[in-house]
Length: 153
Image (cartoon, rainbow, N blue to C red; front, side, top):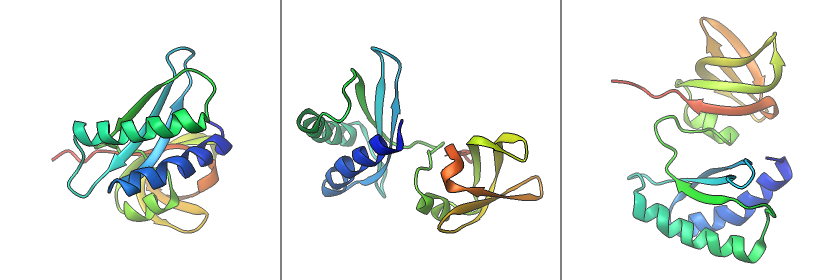
């Protein structure tokens, strides 16, 4: 999804989700022709259930009907971020320091696009992850996708 569309959707959705008492986690648009998916992630301190997702979905649907930011057909899905929570904002990396993440980059860094390691730190532009004892400084703008690796107890 283009950065412009992502920013527009965040501007539309964040106040709606927050106004309903939930945390706006992020948005993904997965274009697949007639089966495209617009997925909005929400969370709450006590977690979210199907009724929470339905409430948010109803409100976001109204915003989408009025604003019409995506001209193609799509299915709207409102979801909990789950155990393999996607990371969208720099603040997410700070929040989940010392956790293991999978990261996929837009362009290779040191000859590779995929990293799995522990978040050591983050600042205004970069995250530092430790992969097998080696630290990698990754520019945030180069991250295509990142997710927490679930802790299995």
